[in-house]
Image (cartoon, rainbow, N blue to C red; front, side, top):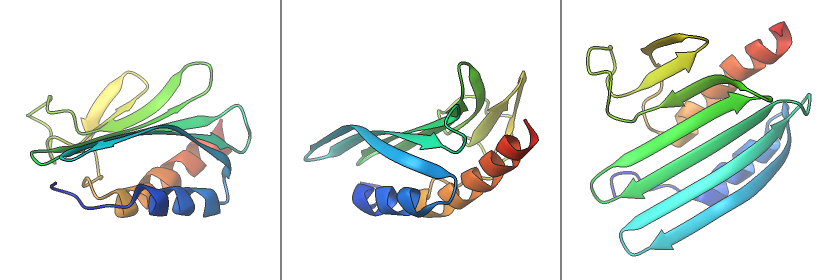
Length: 125
């Protein structure tokens, strides 16, 4: 697998974050050469949610972090489209814009960047 990571370590880090009130494990599906993971974080205030998805195989690692209330607010992912953006395939959807993302595909590093932005959004909405 391209990225060795421990989903339980990620869950522990999420639970320790000051803006997270709850982490729900929606799916952990692991077989020999693939892992599929879905988590939902309830944030403070509770109208905000952050859904996290990881797909990890021998060939690729895909991720998605989506912030929402009753509608989508922001999403980071590395689905391989938008090849003209800097840092392809990493990109960021915010409002009606799609731009290059600062994420790298390393969950432990990326969570810090996602939470920094999420905290800023929550404080300004």
